[in-house]
Length: 115
Image 1 (tube, rainbow, N blue to C red):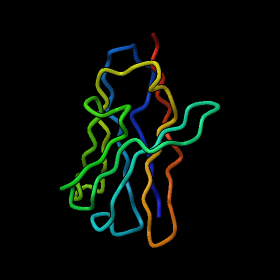
Image 2: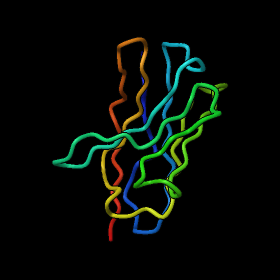
Image 3: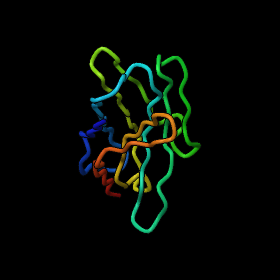
Image 4: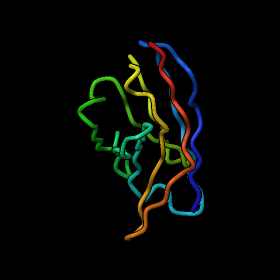
């Protein structure tokens, strides 16, 4: 199982950014996918989740209305569109899936939002 995130960077307050995560080594289209983030000195938190078929999504209250999770099962990709970014969104963003009781994570991609 391998997950690799991309698309992070340094942006300004109010800008947009789209993160991508590609998965391999498992049946991508059969599993839910999630984005988490971790800021320095803080615990890792769930940002958004999408069901295997993309029909249902859930968001943390802090990003609701600004972030959109989506997926393309034909490409084994999951995305996180982040709009109206705020400095508080600065963190390392991780892609995650779970197979039975095992959680799998990517190495993360850094997002920094300047004020």
